Length: 338
Ligand code: 5GP
Ligand code: MN
Image (cartoon, rainbow, N blue to C red; front, top):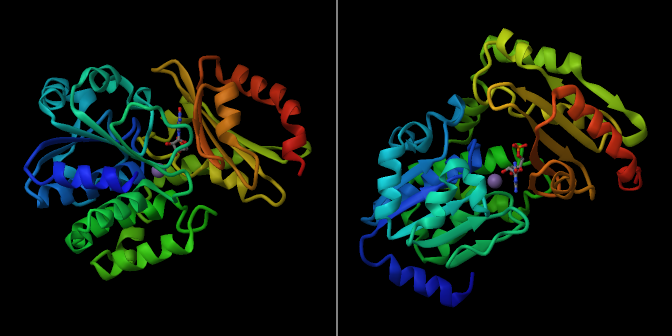
């Protein structure tokens, strides 16, 4: 994002606008924190802003300030599509290819609104008029913080904005442990605390609200964990029956994949989750060091993301998907056995 872009956006935002802010499908903490943080900033500056999420998001985020105003496209199509149609500006946050917005893809594509992308994923598509893309960033929430400051509006960051942005930085950095959290990330987090984010309460609201069933499901996942020492790889499977037995709710499996990576010498971890209704296996991939799960997913499972965290999917059955996964590992042995 150039100085020229910033100037243009600044003058664009001088007069009140109809603005739609979109996170990716299956929004996570960074997606909801960044969209809601930006929502509060724009609303405060007299714009008519709406966050439209492609589908529902986990309960552990349903306390974020402003969450009650979020519109879910999947369950409120008429309203959502009218707002997209009327929008002067559409911000797309925490994703960089229209297809990541699921069923909103066509509507975003057809919209004549000016598009602004703020995102830290690799290989962005070129749809945006103004593109703030930086793959070195810890999170889109950190980028929204920088974006507001680039607009010389840092003083506008109040408790609500700070809380939303801190929540997304916390979740996307794995509580500040991933290599993507830099000294700047910590300085940003400190400033957000100074501006009203209660770090302890935010952690508690996100991580210490487990249901008994979720912990039971974690027990099942850990029992199903397998390791392939030759490839320094660990993987977990969860069948639809196992999810049903634990009364699965959206978000319950968030973070499970990381347990594989916590094993000594393991550098690549995967989780395969059966979604019978959609007829797909959802895949989450995590790595340590140089092994790129973004590339691994793009090459084999139609997904992508970051070097150390990516998602993907498979149309095969659960067992077949795992077989495919195991069968392609030899091709990556060289990269995994560093
Ligand atoms: P998760 O495994 O938590 O679903 O996703 C890990 C990371 O990869 C997140 O940053 C997520 O936004 C991204 N991601 C997940 N699925 C996809 C995908 O299909 N394509 C791309 N480009 N990124 C994805
Ligand atoms: Mn993110």
